[in-house]
Length: 379
Ligand SMILES: C[S@@+](CC[C@H](N)C(=O)[O-])C[C@H]1O[C@@H](n2cnc3c(N)ncnc32)[C@H](O)[C@@H]1O
Image (cartoon, rainbow, N blue to C red; front, side, top):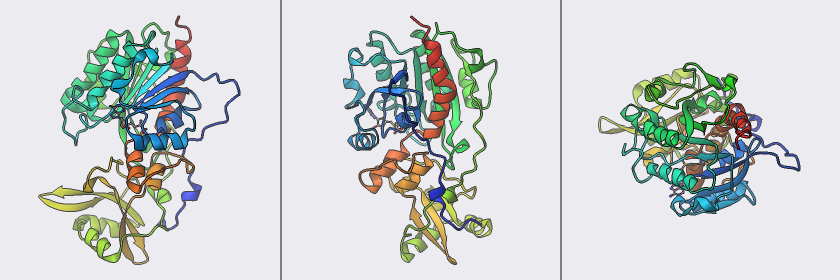
């Protein structure tokens, strides 16, 4: 049983190395940059030449952590490609609301997820498109309608002269958070791709939905990525057991929402913390828990049910509270030094929307960085 708070020993965050005076890193553009965890993760490999997001609260987080970074606060619809700096990589973690399985399912041409076309439009306006692209979104992007939304983006990229492949990477391989996300990587079709970066057939990153979406597509690549070392970090190490819980009345009210079978599992689990979300089942609100010492996927706190609860053992009692923004940041792989200005909700939202840093770092180290080197040979 884990009883002690070990957050001080927390070691699975990305650290940004001291860089040489002459910055040789290839430049990158970051669309939908949010609070900047991608910039944080890519920093050892790429130099941020430009970043953009529409949300002032996210911009505050970005600026707090990337002093002097070239960040433009406005809608992507106002961005003109002609004014963007020439770059090797362009990254877009475009909005997921219309592609989420739990969302409205309106798809890749809808108002919010459809902003991905603005990304393409902006790059079309550049004197030279970046030869390397990366896009990130939720699993529904490849699974809804048998991959139709992915296929639409894939065709648009192939038409523009790219070869493209998608991978499903779950942050749980690096962090104690279940967070599956789709990462699309596209490269100028003229680039000579090192053989070690591609596979003849699907590998661990190519879930069934990806294989289905890829079937018969022109210009498809099975990207090869090594598996990360086995994760050892657990949720118990991330949780700050010294933080105050909700008062007895609120805790008891929340505990009463836990289904009896989950309550029994909790008692028998030996765990001192279990995370859960409130959901409606059979028209009744319940607090469903998980018992594998990992957090459920962080979400954007838009309503009462979107915040993750923790049930914590305090002596012989169970108490509840909402996961706090610092714990959320740890679950995204942000370092303890990563600043979260603003309210509790601002910090939680900034992290709930973000890209898990070690996942982006793994992709950058093992795929994007060597691909960027391959792009050097292009005229
Ligand atoms: C999935 S989040 C990306 C988060 C980011 N990559 C991170 O790690 O924090 C999508 C982002 O798109 C931004 N966004 C939504 N509409 C936008 C628009 N019209 N122009 C620019 N950014 C927009 C949101 O503010 C949000 O930060």
